[in-house]
Length: 296
Ligand code: SAH
Image 1 (cartoon, protein in one colour):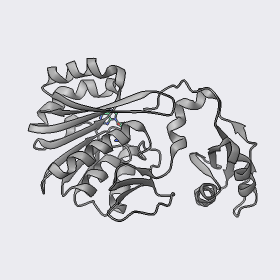
Image 2 (tube, rainbow, N blue to C red):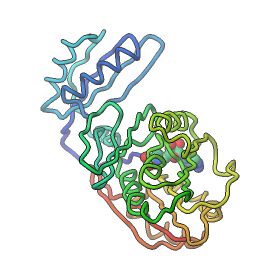
Image 3 (tube, protein in one colour):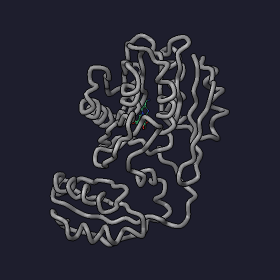
Image 4 (cartoon, protein in one colour):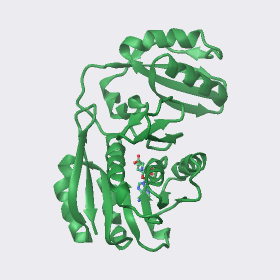
């Protein structure tokens, strides 16, 4: 999902820290967040786990010192390196933190603390290797639509989450409305992460997750379909998704660039959707993302 960028001066720095195993790396990741890390990538191999830790450039040296003195100490700790511009396509990862989507909806990775305001509900995501902690603009846009549409969803209404990733959209729908959700992903690793997040949220009775493709789904049409996929990924699905959205139901298409909206709207109309509204957000690199609300 991440896209290239136009940002020039590196505001972030990265350092690598190597640990004997996943438990040590997880403890160190918590320390690192306390010490100012804003994002991380985890790479596991048979001999250990390497964390690539990101921090604002001005905080990176303090982070390194905190890690060097922490228990468990890293087996190896690399130098602080500026994040080269070419890595900005990965910049959504740097935003890892709690995302306040609306007055009542917060999404946070499991390793980040957030104090909820009265009336707020939170979705807790353990992303694993799946996409979707609520920090990518396309996820935020889809979440904003779900938040807006939730009051219209009656008890027992049915929601389809196409390309669920970590399960974030499915869980938001289930948290905000008394709905039943079917969520699926081509990638079994994502489906596994989504299933785990669903169970931890205590929603497994209302959110069904499967690994596979749309064609494998035998279910009556849905009241709301949400799809946060790249345009090239969702285009081949449009005709089938139209059949799976009940007449007068809604579908939200996110993961689009604002520049693609016009052409994509034509494809939507051909498939039988009527675009009714659009929300847009700009990411840190200046790329404009868009999410379309459509009626069937
Ligand atoms: N819904 C999450 C994840 C979006 S990333 C969020 O909003 O943050 C897109 C996901 O769609 C990826 O996990 C990818 O594996 C999945 N995907 C791509 N094409 C797909 C298809 N044709 N059917 C099902 N899943 C698909």
